[in-house]
Image 1 (cartoon, rainbow, N blue to C red):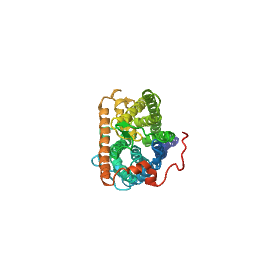
Image 2 (tube, rainbow, N blue to C red):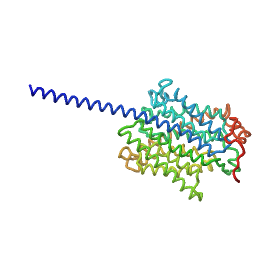
Image 3 (cartoon, one colour):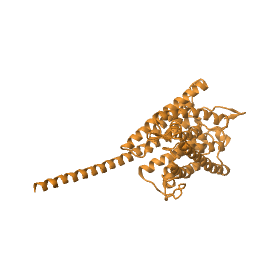
Image 4 (cartoon, helix red, strand yellow):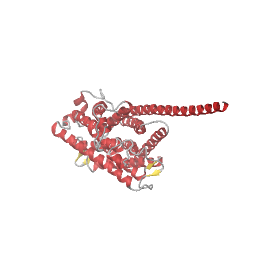
Length: 434
């Protein structure tokens, strides 16, 4: 009888231990799920704050007579992007698919933290175009293009990799947080827009490039700091989870994002110091942004040293790209958006194929991974470039031939603030102390 009692007691304790372990595992899983949702919400809030950064960068790097217009365009992007992506964009990006190219699950898809976080990315893709065509574009035209970008151009191509069953996913393409999916798409759309709208009056005279300096480089600097901060959510939040290995992964993503940004800023600073004879603020600011774009695709597949090198080279490349596009191609990109987001977006995508990693294993050409990943990354970067250029050209060329893209000469010279919005950013007489 005593042996039977001991047997039952022992088995009861074992069952209790198993039940306790299972309950503990469920509790930990539930906590991780809640923490992951909170992480995505906080990250989405940081990405939302990037709209303020874009507003300051774009307005600070352009003329004061167009500052209200810049603010109105960035405000428009978040308003339009939030609604169009909620109504149709999310479904076109994360809906069901039978071919890996196009996705759909009906209107008003997505919910909670996931929809909020992804919406902020759509607004970012649209606002990249704003700065490149500052100072001479009709606001009504920009409204239409912002709708098309957030509802169609960005979400359809984004699904190719991020939906999970897209054709680029099947090939093994890597774009962790959007060097190509977000930044390159926005950058190439900006290039098309800048070409079709044409240069600002006085930018190119007798074949010479005439500098048109921004009205407030301090605002632009503050804007870059805000973007830098927001990028921690942009990249770190793309882990899409928190807890255990995900917490470690997201923390490392934030770390190497900061390293790449710092390296990019120094790369541009040193390059301009050597080239121009003095360190150039605007180019250094673009260098820091280039460092951020350089690591956006590979922030989950790059070592800290690899991130530093990617950001450093991105900061150097962006200086040469801005000079080339302006002086050789004669394209007037008011703030360097095409170079920062388009050109460096491609660099950030293909650098994974040069020295990217998967865990501890090298997947790049220079660290034992061979050329396969490089080929996939190059194909993906090309696909996003062709898509963005093609669709943007169709939309913007149609708008140009119908309602027009550009304001009149009189409006441009007077400034878009008064003509388009009936107000100015800086009322009263300005004393520059000269």
